[in-house]
Length: 185
Image (cartoon, rainbow, N blue to C red; front, side, top):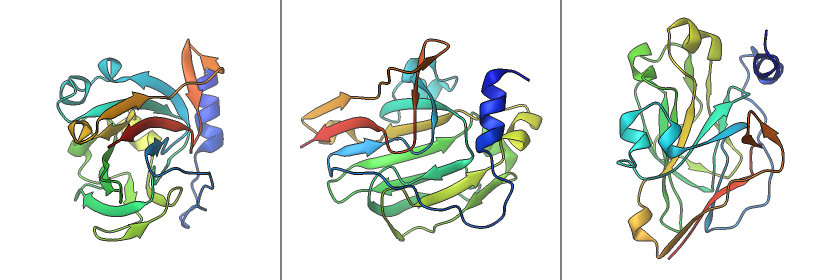
């Protein structure tokens, strides 16, 4: 078992209860990391649609946990039937897409549990969904988490601020609640 797998296993919960909320300071113009892990640039994501920027601008995260937290305060705008993706609309107009895994739509919801519904109001750090990394791996897919600002053209300035002085495999290590994107009108 390699170091990354040991870290992942230490953060993966098998408890069926709703995970505790994460607590972090927020600003209305900022999108935060929905999960801890290693940060990946968009072109490095092994999904042609996401990596090309067709869905917007953002990051990938190689996760070390299995809980996706709200990256900002807002309303759940979109949920997929397969529970592998969720959208959040913030009061500032950010349309945020969180997508768990590469091609995991083919798992038809197995290994995913949604904790919120479309229309729910959420606060930054609230658990949105959980996933089973072992089930994703067993199905032959990657568990890369993509976080995308779906409407970057609606903002006059979009800055990538995801960084860390802690590196693993030359990638920044981020934790839930670390700022990733600042988008201002």
